Length: 235
Image 1 (tube, rainbow, N blue to C red):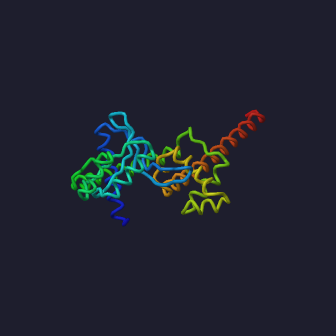
Image 2 (cartoon, helix red, strand yellow):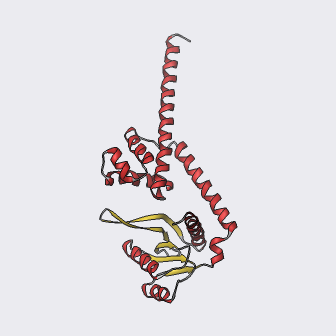
């Protein structure tokens, strides 16, 4: 996907999620991986709880929904035991509409201008940046987060390696073992739920936190030693 197309799709996704929330849907997870027998076979844009209490697999299309898109969201919904829902600009043709009705795929149609409005896009970009900055600050400063010494090497590999395979090679581990680290990162922060690039960013921030943590621990120990020495000197 071209860079401009990718930005347009991300804008469509955020607008679509906001629209769903306004209609009573609760976004439970974004970029949910579809895994069968430990193997990733796909990804859905979101999993949401509807106002009716039902679980929905949500796909967002920056353009129009075609037959392939209908089949894709239906298959993922079956695998995740949820109902299929698509937010898009309408159907590409009558075949897509008929198939969606036959398979029970719910479709929320949006006007073209709604998904590409410049002011909306500006608000979305600003909101996304602020969310990322706030989350980075949380990872650095939240006292409940502790990076264990044995996690540092794993985080460094993820932060430095451009692919999960290269991270596994650096560590001398299998891709499956490294995937366990990525799963821990996804549970810890939404930054890591936006693909491997997001996981690398989260790992890099946590590495900085571990360095700050080690520095503070060292300063604390030094202060205690100085205090003990002054006590012995009667100062």
